[in-house]
Length: 416
Image 1 (cartoon, rainbow, N blue to C red):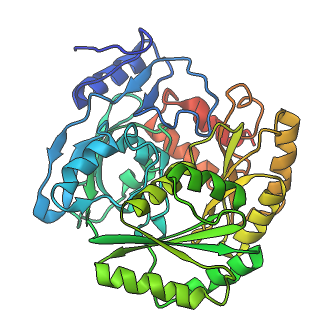
Image 2 (image 1 turned 120 degrees about the horizontal axis):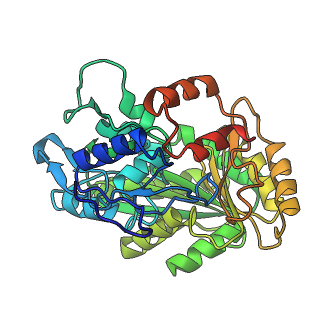
């Protein structure tokens, strides 16, 4: 076995699935050290204390295309392939994976699956779970297993691959994945609306379900987030109130019609002019919206999932606490960056308690996405008790019976 080391002397960089399998098998039968799968290392701090007591398993050398039948619109790649590399390959064939991933120049497809990362387009295209049609992985004792295949229509059965989406590297090390692809759209335009109140935003979002248009993304930003996002995109747009940005993609004439149509439909809710952004500026603004959920020097970044009908009341509470808020508005997913004034654990816990009080525990939850490493030990990273905890424990026991894969992150689920 050829081992390549990176970072600390113990870190392991496999160059094949068989090497990965032997490493985990040897570890399970001898040292039994805690191991930590990593891809592009863009999400190491997500819901986890920044402490690694054993070797990292880095998938950076598992970055090859295994199979790409272009006409079938599927591709099989190794898990360490970076998103930008994958996008470059499939873009050349007029195809894409319509999942928005921050830091796509570093993030790997295996990491995206393990963290279930998504962005604005999840409103119309879903999440990575909807595009994984096959997966290969190695469990905690070195067994290589596969689920699904390279074709869209697989035989029926227990779809274990779906269980690995969002598993945060606690169940197995993903080594290879088959993905369903989509055609690239001809055109994209954004429409930026400026609202003077949360109530107006709420009314407009409610009307989106009866709109004659089909947006691909519906993003909300409070004034603090809007100022940061417009500055990052270098486009002059209204940013002192409540902003909603609608995205349309498809044939150019259809996109142009829809952009004008939503302006007509929402004229009753927005007292200020709407602006259409197209061409390279549309890409700049969209990239800024995609990156914002993780681009923070603030002490704490949190993620809340609430019913869309309850989202604006959560946002009003967060805004009153001086939190910069961006939301995938039609999905009820909110990202918040706490202000610098949240300078102590006591401050942060008080803010979390106020936010938690406006979330219905039966339909929503709150998690700390990133925070100062020395705070992670003391904060309830998963602020809400997990649903299906017993089932999750059984799955962990089946795939990692010795509790060697990122188990500390797994146990964080119950610290709350």
